[in-house]
Length: 223
Image (cartoon, rainbow, N blue to C red; front, side):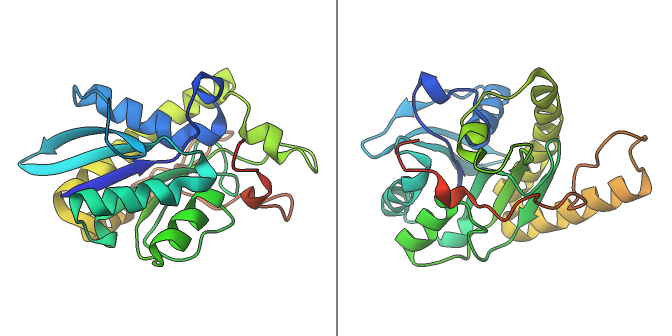
């Protein structure tokens, strides 16, 4: 059993905001696999499916981003899964819009949702797909930026990134963390061998560093 958790804030107010990149990805993945989210007895919506005989559950916490750990605790209790069988998909300001990064495990990187999960389960050994939303905001403007809707250009880039992330997620469902990392390595080499045209951004890069020493921990749980 594999669990894919997308991070985001519940409610129509936050539906297409940058902070909800994880939710948006799961919605996209669910549609492609003819799945629908239903309420669970716990603090999340879920959509259960199978890929090549491998069962998986898509999870959208009904907590706010900063309390995502509460939902993940519920998931572990309900499905009795190991931490490494949980893939978390979330937004990342330290990665340019239109790009992504895979992370095997480790610290929260300043993301409140990841911090909440690590704190709640007392373990940081879960893999992640970090979807870049960029950091094009003035000093002190991060909260407004991440809680604002994607622009048309950003949405187009996001959909292209989702295509790659879908491939990665499928590999995770079938082959676990190793499959996820191996596929990511192959995709990275593909991008290196076929660099984007001038003015475009590659899918997997850290070429743009954060403009400001700010983190998503400045956002309140209710945001």
